[in-house]
Length: 163
Image (cartoon, rainbow, N blue to C red; front, top):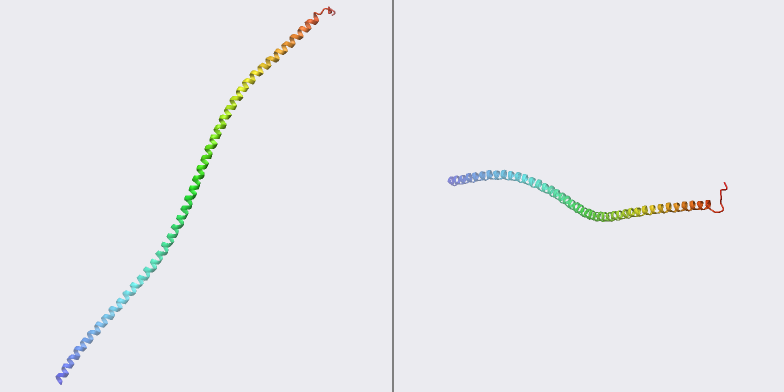
């Protein structure tokens, strides 16, 4: 009986020691759990911040993609405008060549006309001299005829020195 109580007391002491040990383990586990919860809280906060950062970066990426899309559309418009300008420039160049050809033809025609005018001028000068000579000849003939007429009148038979 005493020995039973002693055995029981010993058992109780062992159970109490085990209980205390388990209490300590439980406290240690609770501390560890609190630390892990704190660490988990930090990780959740980092995860949330990372998600926010990721959302922010996705927003920026969307903005950049939209800007790139707009820039691509603007570039396409500029390329189309450049092509149109190039076509217009080619057409204007072609028109300029046509005008230059027309000017060259007109210059040649002008030179030909000037040469014709010079020839006509020469011929006109020759004709003018011929007319001038013909007029002089006619005047000389008229003067000669008047002189002969006057001579004939002076030498006429009915005319004596009546002076």
